[in-house]
Image 1 (spheres, rainbow, N blue to C red):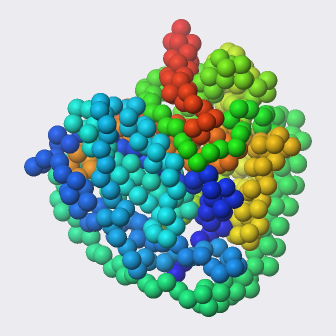
Image 2: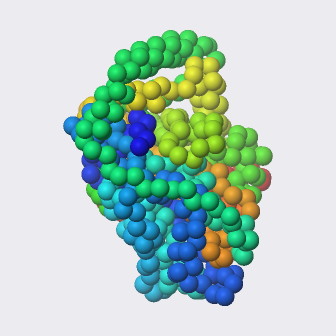
Image 3: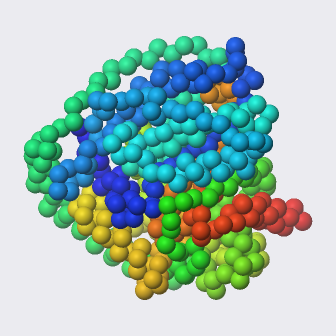
Length: 465
């Protein structure tokens, strides 16, 4: 029995605050089964997952809530684990193209996970054009962050189509569901040291506040967005439980060409591409705010080798969508992200992890619900307008049950009041982009995905002239 950290549990509390906020992450993977020795079959995939389960500990753990919400939930090794519940077979309607796969992925993203079972599902999707096979793997954010999700997915993949059998020792044992009395006793023992944690979190918050004040007084400091400083937009609305999904790819070589010609990092160029796409998309609809949009950019702070839980902080990055010139927009983003990184080094990482650990479940859920409601009612400004995540991926070809992986689209969650998530992952020579949006807020999400390619072409044009 292991207790969730406050940060991990916060994703559960977001769902409790609003049942439409499904806090799971996913990958949509397309494979070419022509490389499978002896031919593709669903059973081969199921056998692979069964063999690799010891390498993916979160896949056999389920949640148990503490009575009365006294403390964060705990993980236990599921005594009723059923692999065939989690790995499911599906098929696309004709013609089985990218549009049909995106609709299937949107349906998967629209349905919450069952909290009485381990928090993941895998759909093996047949019927794709050209005989391809897809997989949609969905895992709750309470169990993994983006980096851990990529690493855990890699446990189910190989670097060759017919690898030598792995000698994987499986020491897993199920455990009974703990009694209410033991859960309460364990929670009370943990809460006994809570005052120490509160004092530590308060001290770190005070140190950070003083550090921020000193940093902001520096004459060379760039103007950076503060808390609740994003402009209201059509992205900051109440969400439904239904999603739309769109896929696209960006050439990694083009991203690097822009980086070499105009400066910044690969991540800066990705943010600039997203900014250009959002500017064009909103401008066509007459909905472009006068002030720059702000992106919430998750940043990994993982320092150990464990692949469990969340070890992230968040960077609120201005996207300079008020700047028409693409070069000037990229330079503004580069300057802002550089200052954000330097400020974090000088001031220290955010204390949200500590405060998440000491905040009670009921208070955390109330805070999330109240913040989103006030934002949507425009009583307070949004913290951010869009989530943009860039996850490093594998630079070498990979195979799943012998089938060569040809595409890998990441899909992220949207919280209430911020109806768009753009997640990017690198694989071989491309950046694969998954766009997830509330179904009602962005009915034309395909246009936004296409605008990403237009924005990169615009930057590439000024980079090569």
